[in-house]
Amino acid sequence: MERKDFTLFDLMKRFPNEHSCMVHLFNQKWTLGYHCIKCLSIESKQGKTSYNKRCKSCGYEE
Ligand SMILES: [Zn+2]
Image (cartoon, rainbow, N blue to C red; front, side):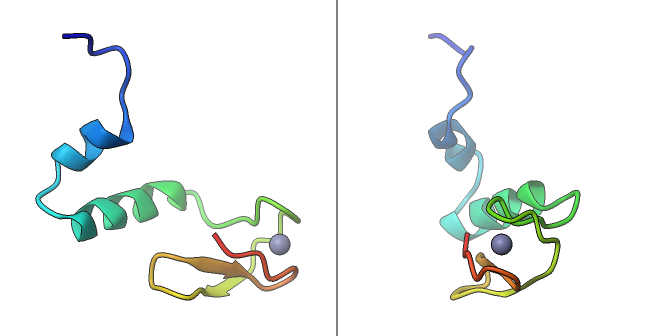
């Protein structure tokens, strides 16, 4: 079995459920602090769900 590709599927298998996986991704993604990928603003507010952040400047949500 090839192990050179670390996929999201591999990651998800390591977690007991989707929630803990999302929390892990969420923490990893913004571990150095949030910045908007569109306008590079560092100010954000809560998005639609607790896993989303919305840029305060341009409103881009990710
Ligand atoms: Zn923005």
